[in-house]
Image 1 (cartoon, rainbow, N blue to C red):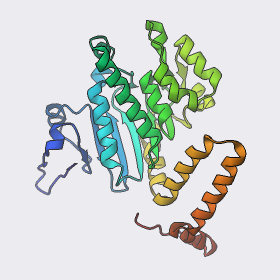
Image 2: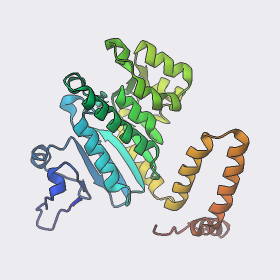
Image 3: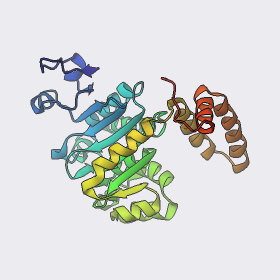
Amino acid sequence: AVVSTQSTGQTNLSVDMMLGRVCTRSPWIPRSLIRNASLLATCKLTDSNVAYITLNNPGRRNALSLEMLNQLISHLEDVSGDARCIVFKSTGNVFSSGHDLKELASSTTEMQHTIFNRCNDLMLSISGSPVPVLASVGGFATAAGCQLVAAAHLAICSDVARFATPGVNIGLFCSTPGVQLGRAVNRKLSMDMLLTGEPISAEAALAGGLVSRVISSSKLDEETERIATLIANKSNPVLQLGIKNFASQMRKPLVDAAEQSADVMVRNLGMSDGKEGLAAFLEKRHPVWGKK
């Protein structure tokens, strides 16, 4: 669903907006509209085909309640066909504190299963997305919030960002965050975070591979936009081919991975954008990618 701002300045409100499922190309959504529609997460698709999905419940430290999870998944589904890069960011000084502990404590066992399964749906949709997903972290990312960062294809953070899996401190081991965390950083750092519950700095996250760049807090939004736009301007079919192969070959033995990737390179050369890119390089001009 799309909220479109017409020349009159009025905003068309759809049923999906009332359900918290809306992505807009307009850079501005009235605060009253967000409040009335109970939007815990907002979405904006720019003219450069970068989708910004923003966790927008700072009063609850952007906790991943079941409603928040549902809205994030809906936004991800809504933009997957149009976006060339998807950015997860947040409002407030906490990227996400993870699951809503009050919700978990008051839920039945059946509902707890639903919440964790829904969280798995989100994380697997992010890591398995054919569209590049970037996490932009300006503050604390803890537990399932840290899991979201680990699930993204790449992540950048401000120099004041911190990351933690502190569930062990309250007798609730961060088992599900450990799934993505253990695949994003080395085993020793994963277990250090999971066993001690202590936060790590942005620099430690960079050294451990949880994030790919650390930016000064005043430049984070600017650098996020620059990187996302840079990615969005690449060939979409080529990026999707590369992302799919990278994930697949990482699960295979070295020789099998090398053989598979060689086949993918040949397939890439036969793609229209592969041919265009090679011709543009040889002709010393900028490539013109297809529209898909």
